[in-house]
Image (cartoon, rainbow, N blue to C red):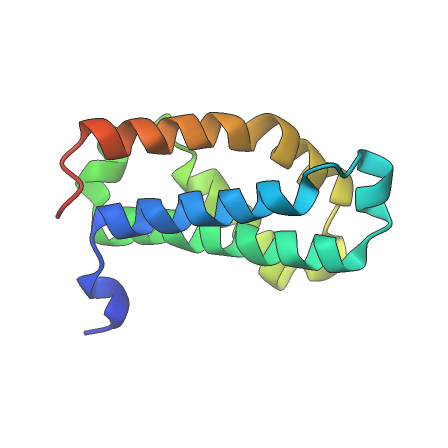
Length: 123
């Protein structure tokens, strides 16, 4: 049994929120042009997208009923993005990464916070 087997839904959701919070800290007061020119920030953000994707995958893998009950959370899309970033690193489009930060992460934060407040996430 791996450590991932022992983690609860609440743990995975917490990992997602923590990674999003880090991404948001990395881009505070950073505009799009600065982002494209800052490889360190890009690398840090990509790492945190990998964490988000892996945590989403673990929710689906170890708690499939919970994931199915909440289809609005982009469990699969986040994992697919993680795979592209980790394995297709030569194909990474920083414009897509920037747009995801600006348009998708705020909604994901709201969704995850709602789940943490309303659901039994102790399993």
